[in-house]
Structures are given as structure tokens and as C-alpha cells.
Length: 110
Image: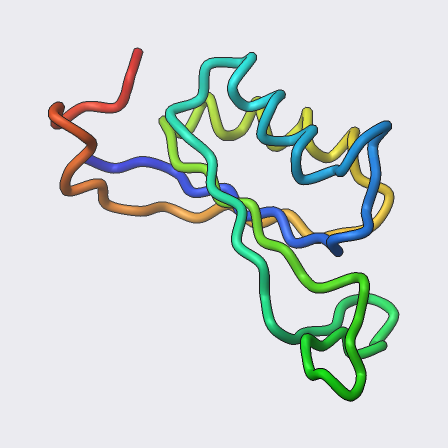
């Protein structure tokens, strides 16, 4: 089945009253999205062009994070607008994916 994937790229130190990544995951759960995953990058840079790295010599307190959510297109679009209101800095992307398996069901939750 076709679905949409939302990716939110932020820094680990980004806040929204609490850790921004946690606030996004909690909001996704509250809004009933199928699931959310947060992945920490080992190195990257964004709008500032400053490299953030897990290298021991230049250990950064602001490693890159990617929050990934896959659900039905209309749900992802609505949530993308919610996330945009939560961000000061960051990048949001949405693309189409093919879901081949979702838990014990072939279909994403209604």
C-alpha cells in the first residue's frame, strides 16, 4: 500500500519546552499516527554549516537527529503542519513510500 513518510531533521539540543524530538514523538502519539522513530546521526550539518560530530576530539552536544513517521498521506500532511509550528530551525520532508508489512496487519491504522 502507498503511504507517506515524514522526516524531520533537527539538532539534539533543539527544544520545545522539553527536548524537541520527544515533544514531536509525544504529539505524534497523541494524534494517533502509526509510529515514530528517532535516529541519532554521528555527524552532520544544517543551515549554520557548522559540523556537529560524535568524534571524540570534537564531541558535539548537538548531534543531528532524524524523526521518521510513516502513515497515510492525509495524516502525515496534517502532522507536518503541526511539526512546522514547533520548529525554529530544522528541515521537514515528505515522500511517498510503499508499505509492504505493518505489524500483523497489511493496513495502516484508520
